[in-house]
Image (cartoon, rainbow, N blue to C red; front, top):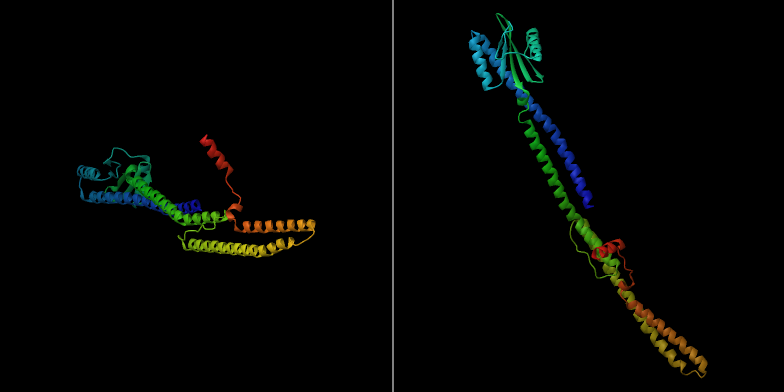
Length: 301
């Protein structure tokens, strides 16, 4: 019973913890992606605002370089395909640039190298495109540590719940085991054995009922012994009278047989009285675990 309670609590707690951990881990991953996307858009919008206010490419390149050192990697693709802030572009990034020029809309895209925030800027020379890139390692920065921490907390909760369930199961099962041990003692004839009343209300009621049953059995046995003993005493007086009457019989053969019958009756009465007074424990067959006894003897030898 104790093991079943522990397993039930452990399984229930595990299901609840997993039910919370999975959505929380997914939430952390989504928050990390949203954070990276928001940072990339802010940087791209900032550089897009500089394109309209900075007159020449040299000043713009210095500003882009300064912004890139302070945050994410920013690249400006001029309308004539000149690059500011990077020496080359990947094929995926070039595809994003063409899409931005065609749709004239800002968007974000995730590739193997990371997350790109693409912002088109319309100028007199055409459409410039600003690309702010968040590397893959930076997108998921802090996510493994957060997931590890959450999983550790979940494991500690499961272990704590299991230990608590073990203690609770012990408090529940120990009184029941004690009541069972008292029942076995009563079965072996120890009528003075009584269960300790304690534990949950159900166990208290069980122990009280068992103690009342034991007292009732003891009272019934005492009353039965008293009745049998009293019957023996009552029969001894007529038997003695019969023995005396046998002395008055003139026929020796008949008198001998009569005395033999009286002696047999006397022995039978004494046997009944002795059986009634004998302790019940002497009548109970002893039982043991033969395998356990054999193992104990083998270990001893």
